[in-house]
Image 1 (cartoon, rainbow, N blue to C red):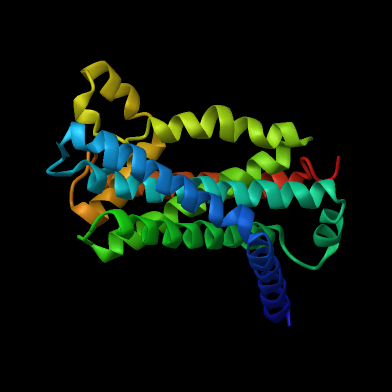
Image 2: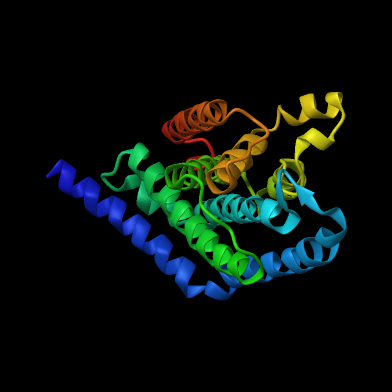
Length: 257
């Protein structure tokens, strides 16, 4: 009975999140596709011709995995932070907290919703990518595992943001002033081999660099970082953020105040 109750609760959260994503598809699916199209037109087709090859591939092929990963990261994060904060703001988070569901299952449900949106957007942006360039797959396992782990990490990060947020301004602060700069400086548009040594060392402190390069390795077989180290960092962040979410929910931070 306990397992059945947990399964029903988890499925309910995920189905609700999926329904929300589909219901507002014009806000969740269409904008990333338009943004990716503009990136490919401006950076890939126009500027890319002047830049030439990068990492042994045409510039548009080189940035393609990074643009897909950037879309996955921002949408996984954005889905959870907006959904969980919306539950707090709408005062229906209490119904979830008093339900016979453990907090770890609540976290998993919201994270699964973020992963679903991240992967859906990733598929859409991949389709857009194929309109502009051909991209082969070097290692299927690395492609799927890297995008899944990255999506989980940022879905968890979005939940932490939502737990602490007290108003709508606070759920946009982190994406605007932290997530966006880290993403743009995470090797999406360039190889860090082009940077001076001091800048390379600084870039190596950016976790998104490892996620983008692991994903790029899955497609192109090239990476600025050790792929094994990238997986270690992603797994460590996922475990640490999951533990942090559990601790915060167990203490009632942001939900019982």
